[in-house]
Image: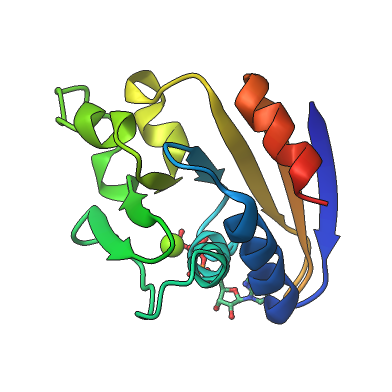
Length: 149
Ligand code: ATP
Ligand code: MG
């Protein structure tokens, strides 16, 4: 199941993330791909709002993983610095937990990610316009997209 949504501003990206965050269920994986500055971290801030996380969500580029508590726990990964690394990174335990996992630059660690997920590709159209392509893989995620209208 695939859906494309066009966004016209930073605020709309946050609102879209917020709407998704509100309907997420334990142990869900969201993968984010898109160029530098596409809006992956901005969208994750919105997810954080929807999960009722009070702390400010910032890019985990240098730490690879940051974790937050809200309605559910959020594990926010940034795989940018892991490009080409094929070692066992020990993330399985987190992917198997009840945490919501959001992975930026998911394409860099494709091999170690669970197949079932909500895949989101963000394309920069111009300064403030973005195109979000949502792809639900697996029954739970197809249901999630039904809930997320
Ligand atoms: P990186 O690859 O470095 O992690 P990113 O994809 O996480 O980048 P952000 O850190 O979210 O991107 O930065 C997006 C930038 O684009 C910000 O500077 C933001 O102000 C700007 N921006 C403009 N319009 C939008 C929009 N509609 N949605 C998201 N960000 C936008
Ligand atoms: Mg980022």
